[in-house]
Image (tube, rainbow, N blue to C red; front, side, top):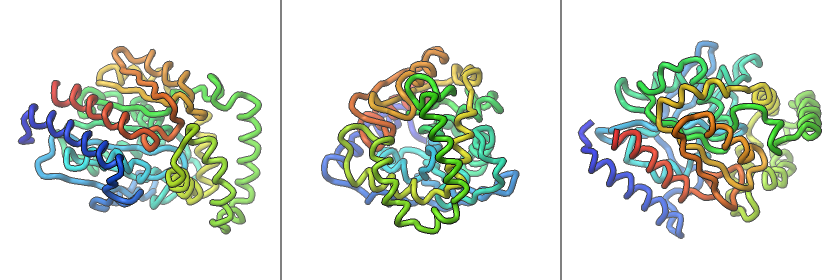
Length: 328
């Protein structure tokens, strides 16, 4: 814990500046290229979670990232790049995603994901080190699931939370999956589940067929083609059973009351103006339920906020850490 507050604050600014410089034509790693120490965390119900841990010398805090629905830990590429060397960085694949095993079908719930997050924290973060949680989409819901079952962690071990492109529940409201669309989506996905073996047995066809859906649903009006392809590969690699199971889990998600625990920590809420999956209405609802929360609405980007505009996201994360860890 040898960093002074001044040195830590300077490091955060340098890290954010490096991230911006690399995004201006000097990429540090190809998309998905960041690797740390591999760790496997086994959950109470036997799921094996694939975890990546980056450990600089003498860290002052840890950042734990929870990714979104049908993505994996590599979706945090630009945030890992910006924060590398500043803290312990923990990224992991949610159950059934990426390199993590699936587990029983009954585990496709936000409550179960909250318990998984707790297991990752206990296994990957040294005791006593301040923690910043960052969640995108279903990953933000995962943090809410943890807050519902273990509110005592917030304000103690957990010092700050960032919720990106997510919802506290009622996903059918505010333009995100209105009633008829939600019912049609649910019907289509359930039919896909019945044909999961056939669909997943043709990965290239699945990837190609899903590309226009990814382009429309996950991004704003002017995404980079390599970003769309990168995200689409993650989506196509997610088993159909997992995709459908967690769709229903998110539809059942309602954690507005759990946000009370987040009032004890610095909280950042971010959303893109063109987010079609978790519209700005949901971000405003979350921020309104958490006293002192900072709400940032980013123009021109969609659901993949941290990939479409990493400069803004990384700058806001640096500010969050400064408020919660440096100035605390």
